[in-house]
Length: 181
Ligand SMILES: CC(C)(COP(=O)(O)OP(=O)(O)OC[C@H]1O[C@@H](n2cnc3c(N)ncnc32)[C@H](O)[C@@H]1OP(=O)(O)O)[C@@H](O)C(=O)NCCC(=O)NCCS
Image 1 (cartoon, protein in one colour):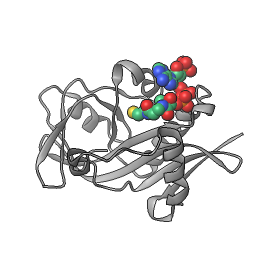
Image 2: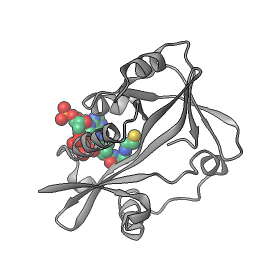
Image 3: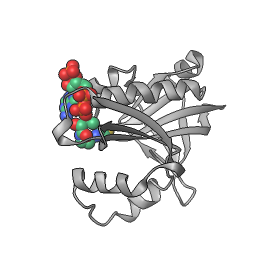
């Protein structure tokens, strides 16, 4: 049986999480300077999937309160780093974690949620929990304080349908604040 839990990043067993990532992805090659500049914010929460005591899946989850949608200051849950152990894939674990993550973002009263992925490959997975392609670039602030663009965003409504609709408009600029996710 798979058990899903959500822990604050500060309370997480980071050693266990890093070992899991190394086991699944292989030891990371040296990160590029650009990657370090773009992904510098630790997540607020980590969603974990366990089979018994074995960690088999994880998601990074941000609860962002410095988000701009056009001229509206708002909130956005960011989902990143979705990872399931190869021995446990195609059993619905990613979907289970994503459902829990979306419920957490609802409890945290986030207006909407976003993530970035290879939409042609994995769009179907995220559509199952309410995400649709953004179909336009979005912006974040890198560690040098410079607005930086990313593509392949997907977006889902959480607590504020109106803000979500505004964010989806082709002419509305979205800035998710410090760091990509
Ligand atoms: C992507 C990943 C997290 C999916 O985990 P998973 O637990 O196997 O996914 P689920 O079993 O919950 O799949 C749910 C749905 O997504 C689809 N899906 C899952 N993995 C897929 C893949 N690699 N390609 C295409 N579709 C996929 C499934 O078809 C499934 O839909 P279905 O039940 O209608 O067939 C896992 O393959 C993984 O860790 N990959 C490497 C890291 C990665 O690419 N992460 C995504 C970063 S955005």
